[in-house]
Image (cartoon, rainbow, N blue to C red):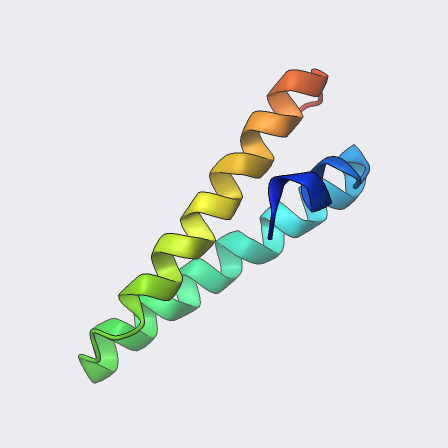
Length: 65
């Protein structure tokens, strides 16, 4: 997601999105480990980047993570 789209969301929505992203990251890592497919590493990088952006926005707002 783009940062402007994330800024439009509320803190509660960002927390929910962060929880979903963390779950997706763990699932993708498990899939890479079991199948050995390296093409999904790019997807993990994008998921981690979005999670970091959400954490930054939450800290700017002073919300609990």
